[in-house]
Image 1: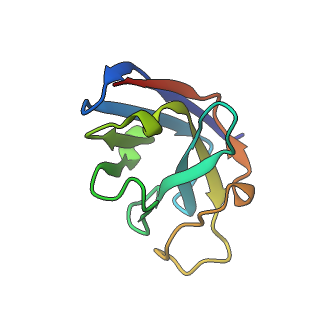
Image 2: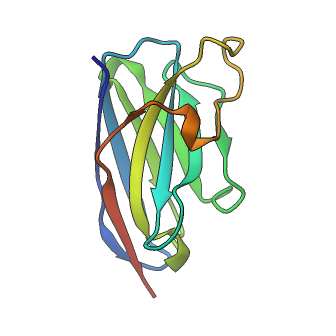
Length: 129
């Protein structure tokens, strides 16, 4: 049974830093874990994703150079380090998992939210200017 649980959401000022964690279980190495976010009144959007074994990461243009995704397979955890936060980064952040049977091993993780079948409950990030 696949389970994911996010933590680390916080309320920070613009320019600040937050680290989110996604602890997973029931997932093998052939999965991608993605981070998505949703602001009030907006669609859920993909931020970044990585293979549980590392590699294959992508970043949304809006977060390139500011956010970093990493993984610790031994701890079954994927991290999202968010630097230089902006007001537009605020929202509920979700981690999600997808089995990558159709991808060559290490290929870029999927970006679309509809491709991810397993979701955590979310963690809130607030950014004040």
